[in-house]
Length: 311
Image (cartoon, rainbow, N blue to C red; front, side, top):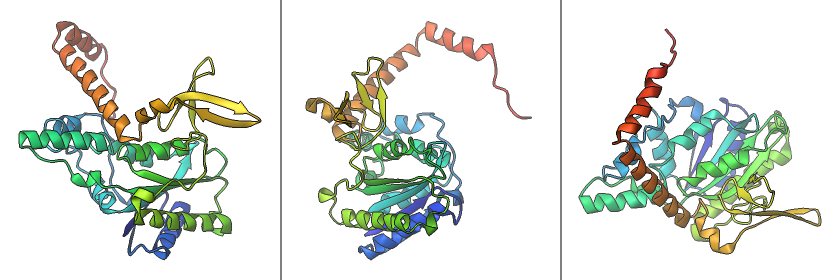
């Protein structure tokens, strides 16, 4: 069993420490191979949204990214692992930009549903198969380390990172007021426990289940919601299910129509719906691009002003 630890924090800082503590727990629980990576050691560029990977994937050409940096090396390490534990610093309530860059670079060519569709296209056209390791089942856990109690956004960032590859999230833990976390025995032990839980889950993926905070959403356990104006409709910020937030006896709960659960963004069924939506909208855009009106409007913005750049 291979367990990979990834820290997005400063070198030899609190995130490194908690990530390594979790790896100690994983090794204790039977991981025969552990590896640790600090993202600050890598050269990682931002996703530009060029969609070259999507066009390549959907035309049976494999779905490669045109950016040449260390992401492919990191992706190889992630794909070969059976389980991954992440430790991420909390910047202004949410995950650091470095972690968000990884989230952006993971999609859409690493989306499980799109890999399946792209594989079918490649087989039918005699093209290049996308990396089949992306279809490998994987369990993940996340640790967030913050210096205060400004930490209410990060759990949603964690779920979003696991969303594209459809990794099964076992636990998310958020440590507030944790500048001195290495001296906090309870938090250190909790990080160790997360590593144990992760390794145990990797032993039997089918039986693996969420072991963290029950949360509010009964589907994904997230605590972040987008509320509509009339306060009768809410959308889970992680899985995207739409329902109603209720308060009964001082306890908050979230309720959705069970028949809509297949639309959840973290399920393969929901992902295929998303692929269909993208296909439909990309088709509309391609047709619009052929029209004179579209070309005229785009050119007007191009001509209006140019971007200011450093000398």
